[in-house]
Amino acid sequence: MKKVLIIILFSFFCYGTTNAENSYETKIFEEKNIFVLKFKVPDKKFPNRDYVLAQVHFPKILNTKFPLIIHQHGSTRDGLEFEAWGGTTDEWGKRLVDVGLDRGYAVALIDAFNDRDLKPGDKLKFPRAVNIALNLGKILSDSEKIDKSKIFYTGFSYGAEQVLNLQGGRYSNQGIFKAVVAAEPGCNVKPAPALSNFSTLIIKGSKSHYYPMACRSYFEVIKKINKVEYSLILEADHYFSLNSKIGKGKAFNGCSENIILIYPDGKWKHLDGTLTNQKEARQKCMTNEAGGGKTREKLDEAINIALSFFDKHL
Image 1 (tube, rainbow, N blue to C red):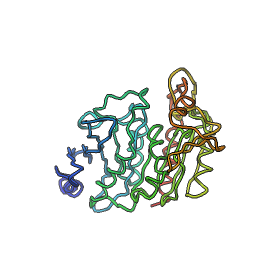
Image 2: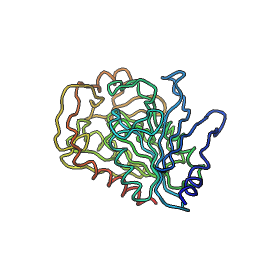
Image 3: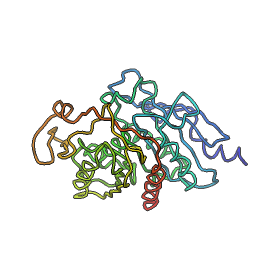
Image 4: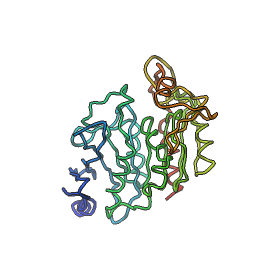
């Protein structure tokens, strides 16, 4: 019976190509209902290092199509290690797998930093991982075991900022994701929202060093034209911990009282209408702050809020 299950789940994912531009390779781990996907998503920041990883987990259920959650890690990959090619996710991704599988979701974890020598402080070098998620969604939507009408996207911290990139006109009608959750994004510099065809949830901790006032402002901007919800977890910091502390480091968390929107014509404007530009924003909005405290007492609560939001869109 187990052999039959694996054939059903993974017959689509043999060595192959989806098209001429996007080759991929898989490694299958039958006993765990997991496969690891190595696929090509070029990024001009990383010439000749086009391949990224995703590890896909399936529930142990026969003869059904699964809703799918794609997760993007934050700047620190401190969670689950992949079964192949050295990939890693963050703690949010690790816990999301456990809870998501129990609730009947397939869960795909992206490693956007694989083979790119990136450290948590290299924030200006990070890839535009929303492109990775969209590419992965297209690949997995062709599987007979994925319900392509129920594909969701979530991310933590840097990953959450990638989720919010979908608000911009470049992506707003992407047609892959039915609903998305941004967990603890920074919202101080964001695309001006365009009319979209998906629902969004922003989750914040009230003690985060990526200050909630910025995301509350962005939420108010989004809700004028799109479906969006906002959830604030009291006393939680950026890591959904209760031992919050702010120390020295580097964070793009300034300009929180007057956020910046990037418009399709290339203009950068503060919420009050003041013009600015990318160079100036990097100087004004980058600080020497860093969040500490990783006891994560509220992390499971945040993940359950995210999954309940996805449940509403099944």
